[in-house]
Length: 457
Image (cartoon, rainbow, N blue to C red):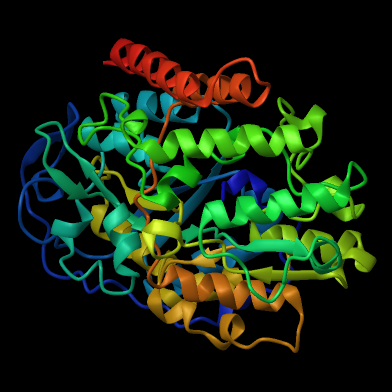
């Protein structure tokens, strides 16, 4: 879930009452200079050995488009940290988070002006780690991993300039995946709402039943495959890219062609609105009108329906998105908190980063009614807020379902550049329109993807 999707204002300042705890840093700072990404830094910020030093002094904290809607919350977290550590001062800045974020952040790093503590996504963390601008938190605090779900901690591993994998970020918050559906429409199609399919092809078979029952009056889902690529492939255990990420290999698996053939069959059968093949619209509007049987897989969608279409919400149920060959839920990379290796007060920055991402603060933010996000700490996911279901309420059921999934979810999702993803999607669209066979579409999609990957180096 991208930070810019977080909306509305926080009304509970729970963080003000949270117990502030440091990260256990103590002792004197290493003297002398070294370099990080070409910037002169204290030698204790780089290399091996635990980071030591007093938690004091000024640092900057940068988020992505959060200040307008969550100012009270984060000001509360900052105040609690400063109270626990007299002599510290956290200056909060908020980046708009547009599509130039990574390039601008790298430019700040190259100018040696990177914020001390910064909210980053996986692409930005990848670039900054390779260039040497982020603190190796796994080395600088050997206990840093303890609060987090192992898969989320593992997802925060990126390669440095030498190709070595290091932990340069702390997992912060994430989203989830659920199967959301209109029980009445499924029953009309002869699909049992209480027994969600366990495979994607099983789900496609249910789509086919909905298409037959709907006969143009209602549909199963939206057509644009951009919503499903590469997520469906990952869930099916189809390898999309080679181990080094430099070439596409999805055409080597016969199930890819079967998947495309299913999509073409469903589109032709009327399981999807014809005008949705190239539309970027998600199912929100049509689902809320009772015209689509399956809604968005984002759990925040369930709350959207509850707020905007009570009559459809009464017919809504949630279930497990098919685990398929993966055998467990797949979760995208979370948002991360990193510490700049160029920080002049690295012990303070690391202490604040760990305080911000601890279980208590993560749980407090996730409990706010204005946001639907999920924590990355094991303790938070076991909190009664996520585990207690209110009757048959679909939203509370979705929250528990996702929280349980995230404890064991896979975070090894395939990351495709927009250009490569669009190249694959366009070939699948041609097959869905009957302009290519499924086999040819898959072959051509892989060739075009490889051309782009080769250009990217």
